[in-house]
Each structure stands twice: as C-alpha cells, then as structure tokens.
Image (cartoon, rainbow, N blue to C red):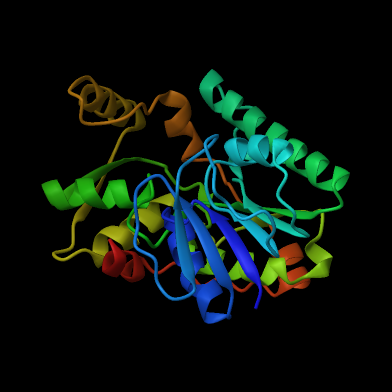
Length: 285
C-alpha cells in the first residue's frame, strides 16, 4: 500500500484530493491547523508551516495543496524521504507578472521563485517534482471569486458588473484538480515539469458570472454599469468594510483574456476537465 503525505488537506483542493487517494488505496497522512478526526486510511496531523512535527519520515508521495511558498521553504530544509512531489501553484505566476498593482507583481514573483526553489531542492535530492498551476478555481464554495460574487448576488438579488467585461476565463472545478494531481503523480512524463490546469470551457468573464447568477435559487439579475461607476461603487463598499480592493487595474483585467493551454497536461497525464457548470458550485456552496 502506498503512503501519501498531504499538506493543505482541509483546504478546497485538498478536501477533494483526500477521497480520491483513499479510493485509489493510498494510506494518507494529512496536515491541518485544526484538530480533525481520523478515518480508515486517513490520519490527521495537527500543525502548519513551519511547525510540522510528528510527520512520517518517508512516504511514497507528497502532495501540497496549500501556499506554494511555505511548502517550498519547508521541503528545501526537510529530511523527508520521498521519490515524488506534486504541488499546486497558480497561473498568477504569469498573469500578474506585469500587473500595475505592486502587490500583484510581488505575488507573481513569489510564486515563480517558489517554483524554482522547489524544483532545485527536489533535483538536488533526486526527487521528481511537478507543479500544477490552476486557473480560476470553483466547486467547493470556498474560492475568492465565484463564491463571493454569488454571495453578494444572493444578498441583494442582483449584481453590478462593469460594462465590457468580456475577457476570456477558464474556471476549473476542484474535483478536476484533484484528479489531475493523482494522475500526474503516476506519470513519469510529468517529472520535473510545470503545467497550467485550465477548466474545460473558455468563456467571457461576463458570461461566467451571468451563468452563475442564473443558477442561484432564486436566480439573481446581472446589471451592467459603466466601468468607472463600477470601480467607484466597489471602492465605496470597501470603505464600508464590505468589500476588498478592486482598483482600475483590476477592472481593466476583466477585459483581458487569461487563457492557458491544457494540451501538455492532456498529453502527459490525461487531464480532462469539465465544462463550467455553476450548478455544481451551487450544490457544494
């Protein structure tokens, strides 16, 4: 029986990964900051980076579903023996490299440097590492985009969106990411590589939101407003403590296509994501 160590097992991707590993016959050790109950085949460890004491000294694979920078720092100094590492990063590593917001540029740089650190540490120890970069994640009701938009629409019965928000997006379901992690782990072709993991459908941002609002019970109405007015409204909500930063750069990005090629992942480990279905989100939220 193979043994896996999963970081971020209680997060949105980790929670989808655990049942897939168990169903495939893995013995799983998972880490969480809060106390959780063991179940057959699954043992929980309580802790978080950098305090990860009590973990097994050797496993067949390590999966990281949490912050890539924290995991890369831990792995670079850890003594755990494993032949395989699969870690989740983000397509923000490339999409935010030239962002106007310094914080977003810093995030991109952090992700890219963390990928390099992980690969260098893995290569130095003879470990095969793979980094998976999801696009816009949904499906667990815990994401910071679709779930929050749907939550605001539920409260008011309608949701304002900036006019012209037609930049293409590829939302990806958490269960497809979990399946990809398991498949990539068993694929020699994925050793030492990074992969974008877009969803199975490319659609305009406005259509993605409209489809989500239509799936709510009762459905909510999408209202298009001029971009400057939208930015002003979001700023006002933030001043009232009811919203996050959404500046002109963020509004402009809604008109920008953020599209990635799934072909390498399809070729190397059979990645086959589903089309965007907000009803799946609705049932899990």
